[in-house]
Image 1 (spheres, one colour):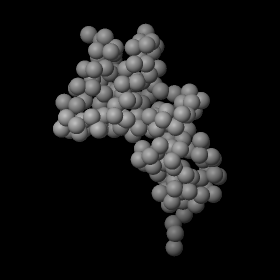
Image 2: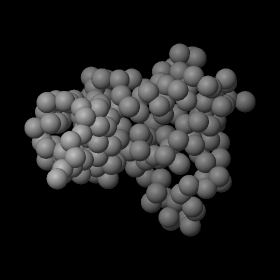
Image 3: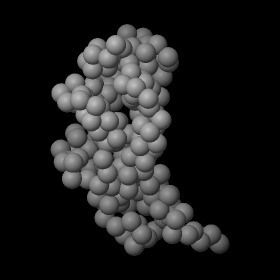
Image 4: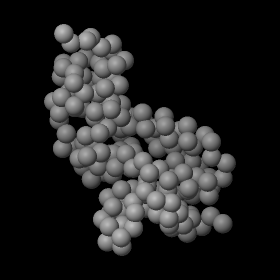
Length: 176
């Protein structure tokens, strides 16, 4: 006998399954049927409780925005902020991979619900072009980082990798 899940449990299962699939492949390469199968829910329940595939993408992005907003709230200075970005893209690359996948899909990320607290914080503090370049470095890391690290026999999640990325971001942002 199948255990009935609540609306909240279904939405959580869908968000988790969608994130996993979107990180593995770009969102355009994932169907709602695959998300339903991974979440072990009926496809109709996704439509009922979440909506369309765009709504699922927005749900996943909003969850990551909430996490990023909490991290940004605890940051005291620009250098610490760059460290948070470097640490997050090396140790938990899921948000960056999701955004990179959306960009590679040619999605207009600005039209998707949610915003990007780290980029907003960089820009609000006068970063402008430096903020955009810093964020581009972080997103580019998601696409090229693993291959480049393998080429130089570096470990993807170690402290030296985080510090090297942080140093590159400091150089771009010119934070002393």
